[in-house]
Length: 102
Image (cartoon, rainbow, N blue to C red; front, top):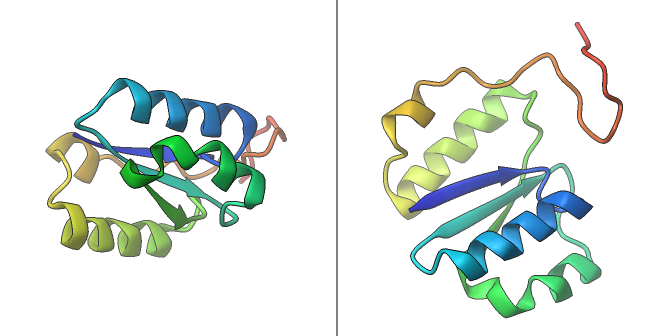
């Protein structure tokens, strides 16, 4: 199983990544965020680091999503159809702004 977690280096995301990696032994988790993981995030994920791959990604950037999908396809194999064909979640900002942008 392959899982992509966006916002993965924030408080909720990093806890979700660690829980998923600890709970699902056959899963490969790609932890994507706007910034690379800092030292605290790296240390927190150390117990599950072998099963977590990090990616720097802005989910509002369609070209970046396409590049990541191609890279993950090469490294991990094809994504399930429902993920390949889903439109990217454009039009929203993260990091607590809590409002739709146009």
